[in-house]
Length: 400
Image (cartoon, rainbow, N blue to C red; front, side, top):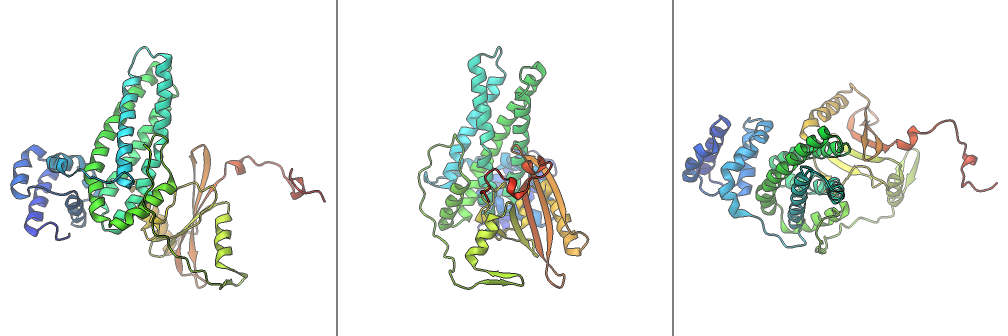
């Protein structure tokens, strides 16, 4: 832990948190907190949680009691709300928080209203569409902000927030499922319950991000890197309801060597430009993770299925997955490294597509493990193929 928190103060705060973990209420320890610790910054909370995990408190326990910690620190945190200029990624995310929370609250109130008018139905459909559209908000955090925080040693708050994102996604799916059957009284009652649960979930989640995650990020991430983050935010895109986003300061462009050499293989040679274009032309998304589980490369295929940003480069692959699925990733990698497996495959429905995901161990000439290749493909059209079509049967094939 950094020198931001003295040893005596740090140990006092850890003792208080252990009392919470032992079952005492936040009210019971507030006096001890004020006397021993006083004000605490969001970055200190993040650092403290990192240390508690290293000392053996399970991450799942930290996540389970995150709300308890928040209740304890709330008075201190209320005085540390982040301030960022309008172009800044933190400002954009906080403005979206306002929109998302407002829409969730309106939806929860609307679906409880009886009887429902035609105007109510139209408003419900609009709010449902915007709820579905909100995915890019979470993708920007997970694929850009969280990796930058991890680079600067902040891993626990992003892990907690990502686990809550998964719960938010589950609630959104349930809302859309029950809304499709809203004419049935039982489905409508369930819709009202789930919509209310989402509004409550977002209120707590956004509070934690606004008062812990974002202030921590503003302290931990150097000012110059925020330009890079904003550029990658722009690459992912924004929600239809995102307030007008002013242009940000340009990030410094990386200089790519333009040497005239060719990359030579046993089966031919390509210039770096040709090699990059070939990899980007493949009708699949590929990501390479090296032997140390670090993400080193991804291609930029025309219709990429899952978001990838430069922020993931250098990130441990375990941090690129929700916590509940990390054990699967670990098991596959362990099998690849031990030579027990030569592949793993999954297929899932995603945004109206059937997506085929395969993992392959990459091995050198002498069989040593070099890393893992992930290959993702939209096979919706492939599944529909029947019979045969020869080259000259193509409708747009040139006449002989």
